[in-house]
Each structure stands twice: as C-alpha cells, then as structure tokens.
Image (tube, rainbow, N blue to C red; front, side):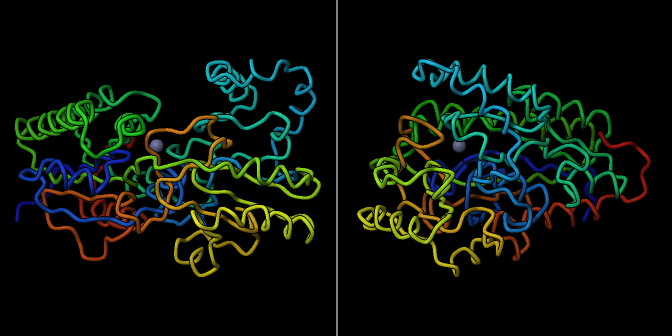
Length: 395
Ligand SMILES: [Zn+2]
C-alpha cells in the first residue's frame, strides 16, 4: 500500500450516530463507520479527553464549574456582587456574554470561558476548569496533549484555531496541506449549536444543509490532496449526539426549599443534565437526598461503579460527593447553564442511543477504537506511522 502523505482528523462536535445513520452522511466516501461511546460529560469534558486520551478522572474536567471554595479564582468577585442590581439585568444573556469577556480578560484565562447563568453570589466558591487553552503547548499541564505530541515527534502538523468559525478552519486546513503539513486536526463546532436548536428527528432543513456543507468541504480537502498528488487518509470523529427535549425538572427549587445554606451546609452545580452535590454536613446530605427523592423516577444518583465505568470517579470527590443524572431528554431548568431549556441537549447516559458519537473513515478503523477516549491512541499511532524524519516545524 502506498504510504500516507497526509493524515486528517476532522472533529465535528455533536455529529451523533443516530444522525449519521438517518442521513447516510458521506457513506460512499467514508465507508468505514462505527458507533462510539460518548465520554460522560459535556464537550468541555470530551475535548480534553480527545486531546490527551485521558479520562475526566485523570484530567480533572467534568462540568465547567465545580464547587471548590479553596481553589476559586473568583474570591474577589464576591465584593462586587451586592452592586449588581437589579439581578434580572445582570442575568440577561447578552450582559452575561460581555461580563464573561471582561472576567476572562481580567483573570488572563486563555481557555473557553463563559459565565452562563452561574449566580455571582456563588462564583467566589467556584472553580472553573478551562482556565487554560487546552490546545496550546502544555495546555494540559503535565499531561501530554496533541500539540505536545506533534512537537515531540517532530511531525509537521496543523491544529485548527477553536476561536474561529468552521469555514475559516477548513480554509486554514487547505492552506496547511499546501504548506506541507502532514497531520491535520480540524476542529468544528457549528453543527452542535444548530442541533441544540433543531435536534433530530426528523432531520430538519438547517441540519441537512449544514451536513451537505461539511460534505462539500471534505470533498474540497480530498481535491486539494489529489491536485498536490498526495495520498490522504481521512477520518471524522465526534464527541456525542443530541437528545431532543422531553421535559424539564426544577431540582434547584427543590434543593433550595430545604433552607440549607449554600457554602455552609452544601455546595453544588446544576449542570443541564446533572446535579453535582458536595455535602458539608451529614444533615445536609440527608436533606438534599430527601429533596431529590421525587426526581428519582426521572433520574438517579450515580453509583461508584457507574462513575468508574464512565471514567469520572475521583477519590478526592473533586466533581462532587454525589452526582444525580437525569434520564435522557430531561433537562434541569433552571440550571447554572441556562434559565430556559434547549430543544436538544447532550450530557445524558453515554449508552443512550442519542448520546452515541461516531468515527467515519476512508480506511479500516482498528478494533480497539470504541470510546471517545480511544481517539488519542489512534491519532498517536497514525502520527508515529507518518514519515518520521522531518524537520518542518509544527504550528
Ligand atoms: Zn453542545
């Protein structure tokens, strides 16, 4: 077989197995296809897993926020909270976006930063996991990420800029091929936001259009390589699917009705699909478990076995003492992430059919690639298989 000149991995956020099956997305061009088990959590969990092959238990990213008064970078923000009145104004989406940018700048965060609907009063007790740009050199600290791997192996590589849109990232990828890059990781996230609005089924027109657009862009990459007489191996990977909304659950009111004091009796995060609680007293644990009881018909507390299976078990309980996961389709509203439900959401049980991710390729996919955490080993083996002795710098 001819050696591979260019190896491309295209990440399409939220391209689920169900959607691929329903639409037959690029079935001819990418005939090797497999359902992939989602990494429990959100994109903020899956991205560091894809970039390092490590699970959340190892890299420490689950929800964006976590209750951690001793590690909170926001301690000083507590002082300005009383000034932010009326609350309704400061909680508006657009105001929050501006505030997020200010806070990000103020703290010198280089990662993806959004306050979402995290109350200001709670911020000084919260840590935020994506303070650093995960894609940057040493972006994951001691853990080797994809960029570190490219640098260490001296592979002429290209990694998309996650700050810019899909169109520009495809353009940059075509240019990178022209510049002689051999390994490309293209990052795209626009399908995810569309699917939050238009979750399948049936597959809506905006989704069909977007998939057709991805197909065109992929074909264009094929052409770029063909014109340069470079052999190409191409693989699409994703992190999860999208689950249509069935109903909402107001866990927050139920917990707050206990009269327990946040920060004194307990801490917690209300993610869109799970409630992560830290119990500061045995009494608080009893009351919170009691308050959540009515929701046990539409969700459940994860067992230690489940946490281990999903790669999120930490003896230090960094992610919370207990995690209550909603059943597929049921969103926690209001949550720290939003005051309204979205038409579609991800972050439910990985084994649910709508959660499943995909890998699609021009060539046989090794049997060991079954979960999102397996992508990194695949990329690593492909990088190592590329012509090893090259001196072109990675960027
Ligand atoms: Zn999403």
